[in-house]
Length: 120
Image (cartoon, rainbow, N blue to C red; front, top):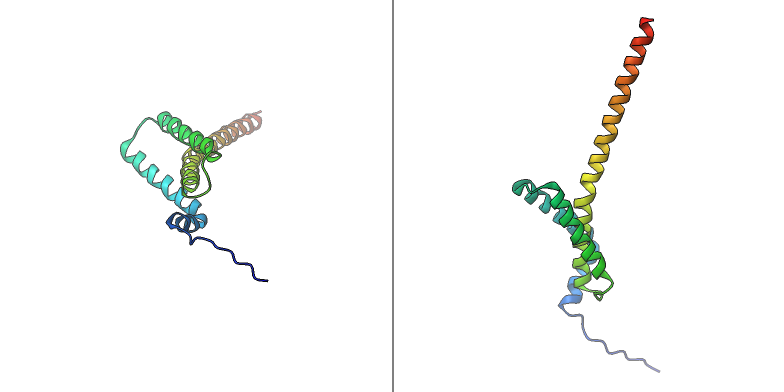
């Protein structure tokens, strides 16, 4: 007994989807880098940039469950990933600067404590 399965050949959308599966993160990073370059050239207010990125991230995450698998969902994943990077990098850098400032203050306080203790 032979089983014959008739299947239509994949269309252009399916080929694009299979090509994008492994490259989503790379494309998101490239999109975030392009956004960063444009932001450095355009110089809008930083809070507006974060607000816009947060709105785009919320929209892309909200639409993921409503869009069927394929190119649309891939595009939403790429845009959402780029916006997460645009929001995440400044937050991580800001946290790093905050930690560095706190460590510097603690070091200065320690040096002052040692200097006062030696004077007595």
